[in-house]
Image (cartoon, rainbow, N blue to C red; front, side, top):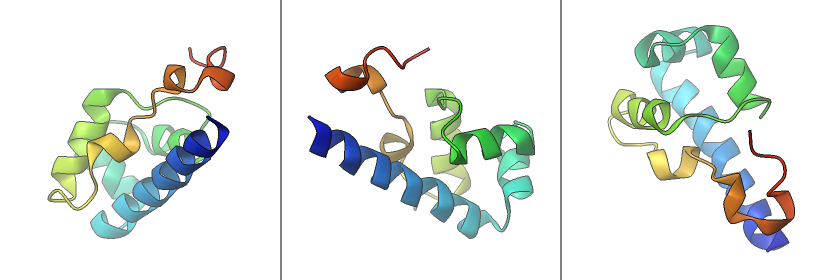
Amino acid sequence: MQQAYSTAIATYDRAILSAISIVGSKRELAEKVGVSPAAVTSWIQRKKRMKYDYAMAIEEATGGKVKARDLFLRIKDFSKEADVEG
């Protein structure tokens, strides 16, 4: 499980940074998705989970180059981290 969790986190990190690069900046990504730049920062720092609707909006904003499935971490899928969700 730990390896799967580590792989998912690495995929998430690459995806969120790629999305920012594709659209141009954190601010532009925030505008396209309908959140504040602070929300984007909290996703980067993994302080808050990204809701699936925002992951889908990012996929759309990047023309499908970044996939929602790579951004929507379902922590409950990783038993070691089950208590972290919320």
